[in-house]
Length: 268
Image 1: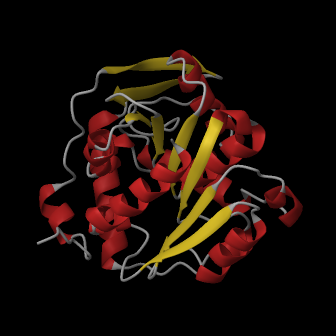
Image 2 (image 1 turned 45 degrees about the vertical axis):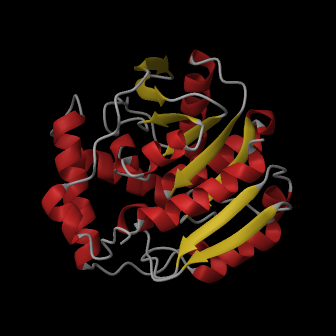
């Protein structure tokens, strides 16, 4: 029977499975921050970018599946998240895209597929916009491209459980364990106004994009994802039935199957 944790009660009591031991890990200095990364496996490269307030360990169900499918899998802690540091400058998706390129340069990765979750999805899309030659495709899971795409916030027990997990992880991994609330404020400041991609800007993004959303996403409107898929020139739209913003943790097999189908099409 496939694993299911739709209400994240298993996560609340057991946490997320740890990442496998990396083949390589380290830090790269970029624009005032030390960015942590880890590489697992071999083959065509897949980079996984986590969501706001999370960290690379959120991919604990995905990394083994992607490695087992024959890909090199690279995870990156966004600046200020997880093991990475930050300085006082404002957050932007452009800055985090630059961090991703810095890791790619360190690891001598010319081109990779990007799997992005929430803020990580926008980082991947900006990376594709700025340097399409470095991006084989973007799996764009659960984020908006302008401020019309978000739903009014409503607290739920599921959100409470993931938020509690983020707090625990931050305290355990960060070199500034007392700064969780400050980081949250800095990330929320970015999210209020970014990204703000016009239809013309979206239409100029040439890489393949899988636009994916859980049917019951707590934050993102389905209509907005349909608009994104219609406006990008090489995009598909998929809705994951019964799942939410936290699909990678709720039903990993469903999410992983979608990721692997995407990768088989863009990494040959």
